[in-house]
Image (cartoon, rainbow, N blue to C red; front, top):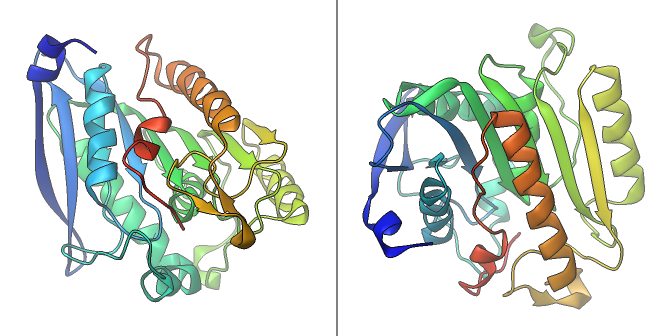
Length: 269
């Protein structure tokens, strides 16, 4: 990326609300584009929105998108990069209605951004963020054209009866999955394939042999826990992501490399 392109990037925190909860997103765009641009939402892993996710938002902006790093946990609520963040993720795993509402609040915040084309928005999520991306797609909101789960959690949702039947999923869905990921066993992969098919979704799956959880992050190095960086799988996933976003957002721009996060030495949950 050229230095001139980087110098045109404007990035700033952006507060938004889910009910009484304040969340702090992070939006980045290229000031050289005066028109509304397609937007890529970034859903964080279990440690919360951090410098890695914000760097990704800036990377998407450098490629012509508006990058918007979401905040699921709430303003100032952050975990440890290498710690156990189950206490932060757990409430949203247990209350999927809460997670769905929080994701919709982030989507609406992005739509209000003056540089965002509200009809061309995709969400990309890592690990816990993959679950977030899928739950947003399950909501079938207007303007969401694509959802990507990258080594994502695939737990099926449990919602109160007031939510009614699953509506048709209108966003295209891409699953980028490490076949040796202990958090998403083959039966879970088959289950979500059936779910997406039943919901009428346009979906695709790329599964990478010998790849474990968090395979895109160079800092992932705990094979006993099933967490390990895999350079080949990361490159293949990055290429698949670029192609998918260009298709669902109607944009020819290339997008930020998945490995960008890994170069920061991050591990993921």
